[in-house]
Figure 1 (spheres, rainbow, N blue to C red):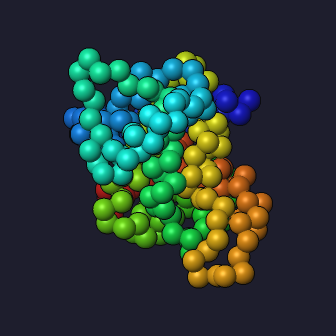
Figure 2: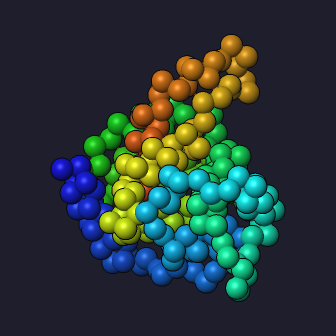
Length: 218
């Protein structure tokens, strides 16, 4: 039932996205976008769940952090190692500031099944979350969610729907670690909220076309 609902939301959002000026994928760039494009083109079952060789994961992560990742002709890419490197890249990038965690938990409570144009969730993404991101990180943040949204169209092949992707990426966007401004904070205190954090990421993936379009209009 939930899978059917997700497909309905996905179809609605894609029509909305295209009707409000959505664009095809941008040309490949020799960095994060190149990695994301490669994974979309070669998506298969196990992506973002199965791990690759650890030494290759570390190599890919180092290149992603330096924005020097390239797809070289005739040089094989370990898809699962690259997927793990992307997850680690999200983790080390610390896109979402700790002070917004509570607001994200509140936003995760919205019932997005009642989609009708602009939503509270979309307004939160555009008016609160995106402006809080460091300038250099904002396009990377949007690239990642655009990529995850595109993967939904291959869920029959990858066996990864929005809920699965939320579970995988939730801990990377909202890591259970001590707050820099609270010495008494324990990681376990944050870990108990992991499920709603995962749901936030799931909803951000599903509604990407809406909040991306809304952001361009403001």
